[in-house]
Image (cartoon, rainbow, N blue to C red; front, side, top):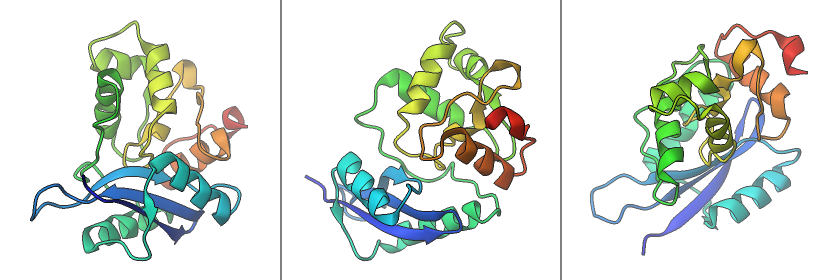
Amino acid sequence: MTLASYCLFETPLGTCGIAWREPATCGSQPVVTFVQLPEATPQATESRIARKSGAGHSSAPPPYLAEIIEKIRRHLGGEAQNFRGVAVDLNNVAPFCCQVYEAAREIPAGQTRTYGEIAKAIGQPSSAQEVGQALSKNPIPIIIPCHRVAAAGGKPGGFSAHGGRATKAKLLALEGASVNLHLFS
């Protein structure tokens, strides 16, 4: 069995958390299993990541995770980062959700796609609603950029992180995406 850990870190948006699993083989990098965006308080953030990730608290992440944390900090500070190369663990995620998450990872910062476009991209054009449901369960936001997926007609769609649509709008604005803010309120 591999060791799972999490730590909290400060960002321009508040306290975030990241959980990871140590590699099963020597010489491999840890894989990200969960990312927690800021909750109302740092204590709420920690409570949620501890519960959702099933990992134990670590005071210091390994160097590879420290690099990812720094990228998340820069990203949430308005300096868009590319997270496509970050290794994530989706072993306990349904195959449909994995397809949706992989398609979402292909959306560049500053751009959006609709639930319908993602459904078409994974070969299931009538599954836009299911795409939205899969994204609402995304365990690794920012790295899997579910905030870049919106509803048809320029509507924002939902966002399951604390702050909901306002947080989604803030993330898109940080990336330089064209956001119609009145739709997000």
